[in-house]
Length: 199
Image (cartoon, rainbow, N blue to C red; front, side, top):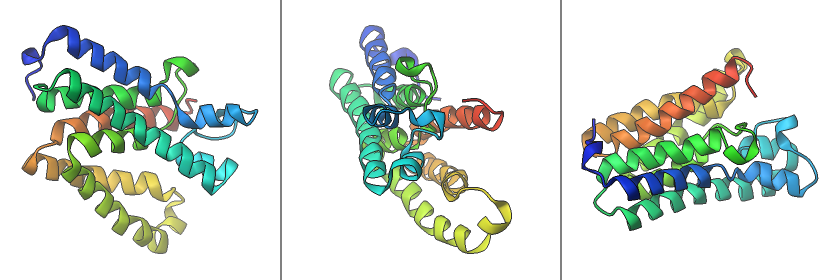
């Protein structure tokens, strides 16, 4: 486990809180409210839900917005605590994903966390991100062609369940294990909450 005790307390707390607040700016909720509705009344506020409710262009806008907040959280952490290493990366990645899943500005009812996780990994550990994307690029079409009709599960959660272990393996071998584990753990909690019927 990364050594959190080596991190400077005040700036570490600052960037972790900032990451959570950035994560809490859920693009799908902001977009849908600008359109006079709240997407959470019908769907999850991520890219997939936005696509279903508002179309492809809106989904692209929302996805980019949620990726950007992960990037911004990671860049802020790098700027304010440059010596933070993988310990800081894990804290900030977990915080920005937690903010997206449980946004303080929107009654703690957010999305699944994939896009902000991708944004944070893009800055902190691009090799792990590449492994995730390549795995998903293979799994999604294969799953749709073979198993989706029987399992009745959306392709994105299925691909995530396969890609995250691959990313963790790559991270363990090359660096970047802890940020992915932190973000993935928050996403797993959110997924379990949603499966139990949570909002």
